[in-house]
Length: 353
Ligand SMILES: [Zn+2]
Ligand SMILES: [Zn+2]
Ligand SMILES: [Zn+2]
Ligand SMILES: [Zn+2]
Image (cartoon, rainbow, N blue to C red; front, side, top):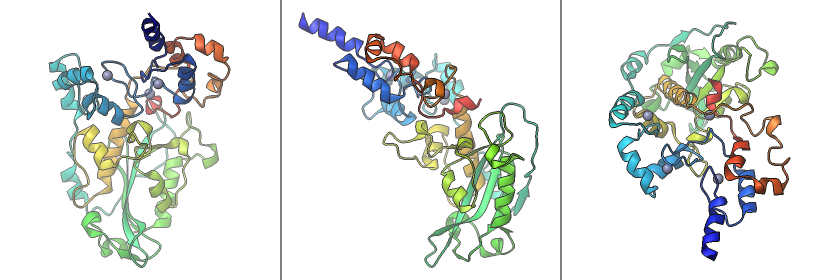
């Protein structure tokens, strides 16, 4: 008899998102206070378990210690790139054909490798659906006595449709001591008369702000552009650019794309795992990196999540969601009710759409 009531007690104290079980209701309440579970977390399409990242969802579905029931269904009906479950083998085949992308532009990159400058950086006032989105990537050459100091030698910017907006060699302000030719393909003669860093910096800065003063930039309703990339802080630092964090979408620091241990994944890994093709083999054009990050961003943005009035835990309306309820009131709630008032602690990119 004791075991029966224990079982129902444990069932009641099961987190409605991650399914962790607690001996006491107050422990579940405490768990909900700190977990920031939300509709934006990657979720298993079979058992509906929420995961902190796609990496942990992948572990849940594929291994090394998967949930067996989910693994069995996933192995027949799951897309191994975006991890969704389709309703038939046929629709899985059709879906995966579209979901797996390829490095179609490899030929173009090879041909482009000698384009010195493509400069379409113009400001404009009109935009249709929300702010415009651009991806940026650099290739670094080496400076300093041992060539280990990163200097931007080449930069590329593309739009949402993978069109090149800006693509140029950059002349660094201090001497280059290592061109890192095997990966950059950059030779000294390419940089000799290249665009000076200061000019590159101001062109990109103006383009991103798009006529809006930096202090006026706000996440919605402005003209400033959303900037996508991988490890953007380092690029911005090397370009001597400043840009508000709220306009930055970085695939290296976006929680759903990070490792379970909260470290960044490499772009090479993310592209292979989520888009299904290889990048960064041999000489690398920053255009390739722009395309991969833009595609990852688009995939994350297109996720269909339930619409909430105030989606972020940091929204003022939510600040007191858990604090304003008395412990006793929370303990009377069901696990589902608590999940319903819980909000995400990161900005989900679906909110850009
Ligand atoms: Zn939980
Ligand atoms: Zn979302
Ligand atoms: Zn599952
Ligand atoms: Zn897919």
